[in-house]
Amino acid sequence: MPARAAGLGLIACLALGACGGDSQSRATSAHAAADADLTWTRALAQAPFVGRDGAGALEFVDPADGIDKAWLLGGWNSAERTHFTSTGAPGCCTTNEVWKSSDGINWQLAKPNTPDGWESRHMAGWVVFAGRMWVIGGDDNSGHYQTDIWNSADGVHWTQVAASVPWA
Image (cartoon, rainbow, N blue to C red; front, top):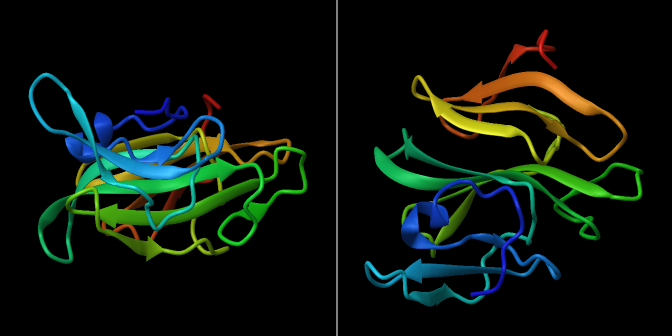
């Protein structure tokens, strides 16, 4: 399995796949652990989402169907400008896309990259707490760091909880 970029904190993307970007090409694939010895087998050669690093990976029950799913949030890609927002900085592009999967192979776009909700970012704090997904701070690669906090009960609709926190 190729080395993975930083930011996917969910253990092997729910043991369903090391979902995310290759450290050089930002290629996407999923690898699934086939046994307790962690022998990895490629489960998906090309994921439907664009490769990225600094993304969030969470495990969260989808309220739409009550099924526990892997969620991929945000991220950075140095060259992709269709699904990522150009920041005008040399590091280029971040996104606020949200993807979900119940098996690590079949992924569905829950929220496209839009100006709605939290500002596009990577390297944020990504956590599940009190029945919600949370996005805390981050970096949009445009010369400033975000100090805001957002949460969502469904991955689609996001609420700003704090515009800025005192510890940021």
